Image (cartoon, rainbow, N blue to C red; front, top):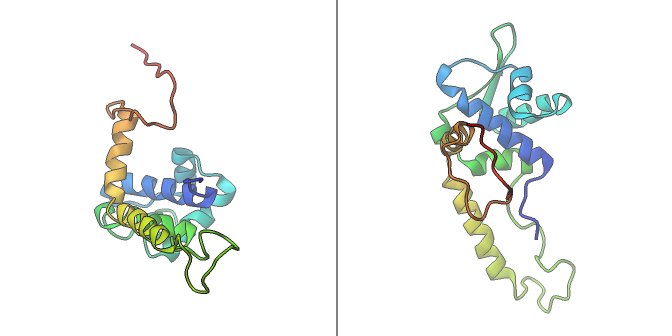
Length: 161
């Protein structure tokens, strides 16, 4: 099973994280700043930021002092809110077993277990704030965040002394 975000979901999370890290300044971030900071493709950035605006997580302002910013503190925005802004609602749209064989019309043997797993994922994402991610991101950038033993990016960490 692939437990990763689509490119759009990835870019929405990165962009929201960029806006969260600059929230305290009260200013707006230009598209070019978001592109440079979190490596979102320039051609896609306006659509991604529009996803955050459409989800009422960010606002935009035109003009010299304009750009994008979060509408409320990152502590009040969940990771679930951000992911759903890019991915759409996180819920099963069809039977987890696909097209069959299903012995029952409205439910399959996997239905309850899959529903519980989906609810647990939603709860975990809803319980993680954008502020938590921003703090974690700052610690990673500073080199003070410990690499988890189950990291998906294993390899030698090279540190210049």
